[in-house]
Length: 159
Image (cartoon, rainbow, N blue to C red; front, side, top):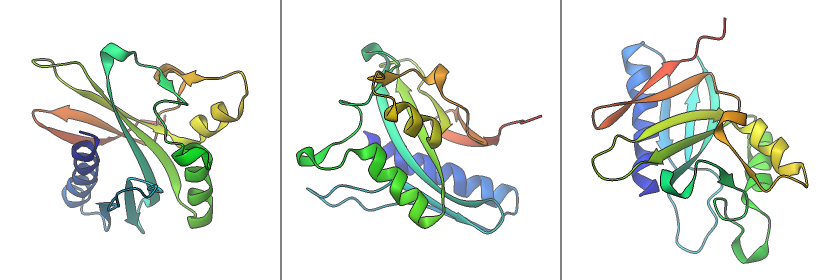
């Protein structure tokens, strides 16, 4: 299920680049079985910058909060996904983002938002925090909106 969302995020960025005559390309990283994946989608553009996006797709009936233990991977009790992703973003000089899709069930539209990775990384570092609610996250400079069966990328007005 999440792989479809990852593909949709990459397609939304590529469509945005094409519509706005922006040099850039977004692509989904190939996932190997039994290997931790560093990041889901990479965006490479000299015009808007270099971005690494982690994608999460979650059933809304399980709550909107992202649980650090169950919603992020921790393979074989090695390094948790959040610090591992944060290190990757720092090493590659990329801006980080989390694309979160909430699935409401059959007959209901899906919704998604893109948030700044730095907020998640900071919240994970606080020992008392076990989860995070999307309302506590800062919006990324781009957002993703459901249009029919696809997603459209829009710029967030920062004024």
